[in-house]
Length: 351
Image 1 (cartoon, rainbow, N blue to C red):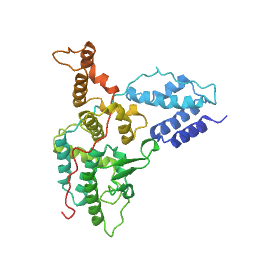
Image 2 (image 1 turned 120 degrees about the vertical axis):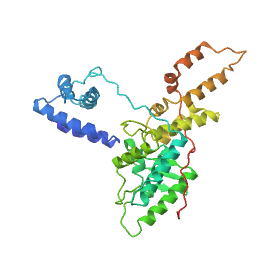
Image 3 (image 1 turned 30 degrees about the vertical axis):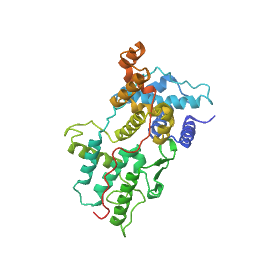
Image 4 (image 1 turned 135 degrees about the horizontal axis):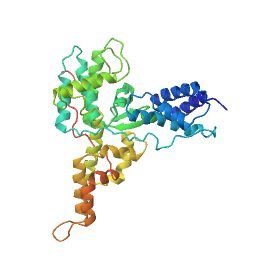
């Protein structure tokens, strides 16, 4: 029988081959094995798993629960080859993490952000256009920030109006269709990028820094925070507020609203949006649509239409119940894909 350390390496290799990155889990499990070796124990026990998970003592309970979940997943794997393995019970260190409440950007807020990006004072003439194009693309495509950062020039087929997303979450790749207005702006940005870096070495990534490397994720967030404060999305001293990831939520919500208003069946079309967003399971897409007043109004409008509510048709008791509990009840039934309602501003290539 192999050692715990060997078993962890095999477990991580197997999971990563399936597309899981396991960055935090990888570091955590190697630390757990070191902890077990110090205790001279060759198999997993619930008591030791719990003791390791609760280190250090000065962190939030969410961190303890996360660490224990690393061991639990590995223990399930290890139990197939070592019957002595104890799998930590689900009830230990119970904690339900709170996901950040998404912010639904208005069209005017997106336009203000894009204008602010173009007006950024900086030495590099390309930098304002880089952020203008990046933020605009996020707002109309539903891409994850990491997917947009990872785009290379070869991933754009503007004639076919398609982006190729390579090695996305869980190692998946997919094709993302683009609106004609978005293709026009991307073509303009690429032309500017080519002129700016003419005769100099630059990486193949679409969005590059002042040094020609792929844009740094931290720098993107810092730039967004500065611009969002300038246009009033965040207060000067706010540490929390609208996020770039909320652009993805906005895309999904707008798509579903469009489907409703076009009298389409969102429930049947839900897998399309799920595939478009790169979700492994359709259920993963539903979270993005959990807090939209517009969706609630459209859902109620359709319910009322279906039951022909009027003077001659009183509202059914079950519909009154749904009205009271719609925010939670609604989340289990829908989803969407649309053409952008806020196309990125289309500047002149020679400007």
